[in-house]
Structures are given as structure tokens and as C-alpha cells.
Picture 1 (cartoon, rainbow, N blue to C red):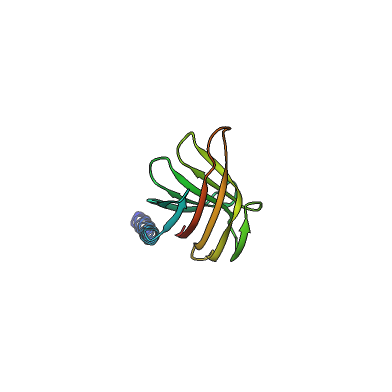
Picture 2 (picture 1 turned 90 degrees about the horizontal axis):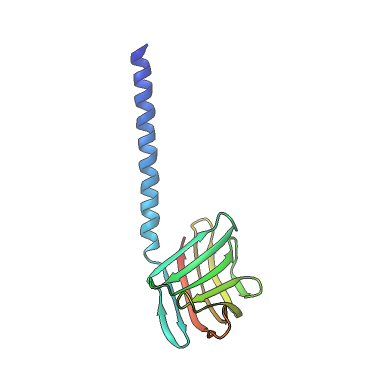
Length: 154
């Protein structure tokens, strides 16, 4: 009887190990896919090619957050509905943000995001954008974000 329990326990542990390695393989494949992500724009006429590009669905707000960051505190973010479809959207229905540093940043007040394709099954999204920000602090500059485009697997 003890042998049967040990064999049963061994089978259970082996099946857990196999399942966890499959999950790690899927995660590894997902990480490999995300290395091709791109997020580019021009900020006040200066080229901006993000070094760190990511996308994820916030579990709290159920919003798709796309980020292109430089690794220095400078970033561009787009906040989109998680089920957004192909089309053109203005910043009355979605949100965008540019941050030059901890002091200088602003949210989009006018502009557009054009979703070219969004595959919610394979979690990939591609589009373009432009916007002008309103400074968060009085006396700080606004920013013109133009020629933006992204291609992200999240």
C-alpha cells in the first residue's frame, strides 16, 4: 500500500514538473517575441526611439498600457481600452502621456491614435499616433509628439 502511495506521489510530482516547464517555455517564447517590439516618435522635432518597450493590461483598470521608455526617466505612454479595434481615436476617449523627466511632463490634450491592427488572441497591437501635451505644472513646457508608431506584443 505504501508503494502505491509513493508511486502516486511520484507521478503527481512529475506531472507538476512537466506542466511548469511547459509554462516556462511559453513564457520564454513570449519574451523572445517581445524583443521585436518597437516604439518611435519625434518629440518637439527630435528623434525618439524607445529602448524599453512594453505593453500590458492593467488588472485594476482593465486598460492596455503601452510604454516606450528611454531608461532615463523619459517615456511616452498610451492608455487604451483593452479591446480597442482598428480605427482612429482622439484623446477624448483615450489617454497619452509624455514625460521628459520627473519635473517636466504632460498629458495629451489633442491628437490621434490610429490602431492599424489589434490581435487580442495573440496579444499584439500596431498603430501610429501624434499628440500635444498640456503641462502638469504651470510654467512648464508643452510637448509636440509627432510621427509616433508602435508595434508591440504584450
